Image 1 (cartoon, rainbow, N blue to C red):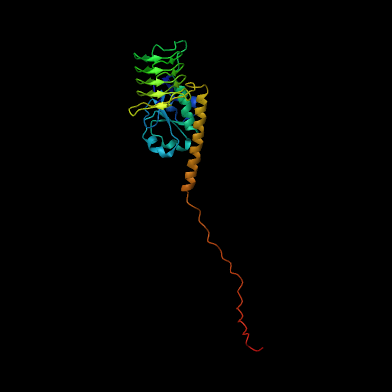
Image 2: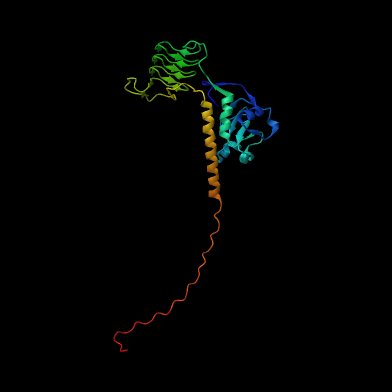
Amino acid sequence: MPDSRFYDSLGPLTVAELAATAGARLSDDRHADHLIAAVAPLVRAGAGDVGFFSDKRYIADLTTTHAGAVFITEAQAGFAPEGCAVLITPEPQAAYARAANRLHQVWRHTHGSPPIHPDAEIEDGVILGPGVVVGQKARIGAGTEIGANAVIGPGVCIGRNCRVGANATIGFALIGVAVGVALRGDGWEALLAVPAFVFGALLVTALALLWRGASEFYVAVFRIADELTAVRQRLDQLAEAPAPPVASPVVTPGPAQAEPRPLRNQAQTP
């Protein structure tokens, strides 16, 4: 399930609407009006979530899931548990990505809001350089220094006594204390200095938080993953199939060999 600190929920869809959005077919119309509000892995999904299944190695996750719906191929649909809406598609992962793009949206800087969003939480002692942008619900700890023109994305959490270099962009990250983040070539001695007590997960990118067209890219990646999974499953089937019987070779007898002539005694008189 997407982290609510970085993603906004766009509201629930019925299973029928979700099938149309993702390009799937609902196998049983009795589930058509069931509401789905989020995407989630099968092991954590609940009645209001949709997951996907494409790899038989995770069959246990499918048979025990509590998901309200699942994207699955027609050949594997029979493994879905009772009560789970089955959405038939040859590309379960790609369909899942389409559903995620419809149910969730990345938090963006609110149009028309000031550079430092009023919903951001900034403790005393934070130093913000000129041109800094801080998104909504971002949190920055005391003693942290943010360099000029840096962008702190919505929902990002930066601990105390950190240093973010100029022109850096941070999104989808939870950063601990006393962490240094910089772009290459900005004159810092170290690109990233993380002491042992850092507990956050760090994601730094110099690109925009989310480029237009990223959704189509993710769908294409998942489509390729579906095709590779299908190929692997076919190879597994071929490997498990019994080998055809091998015919015994037919040996054709050759012509009889003549009796070897005795060697002539050179000492014998003709």
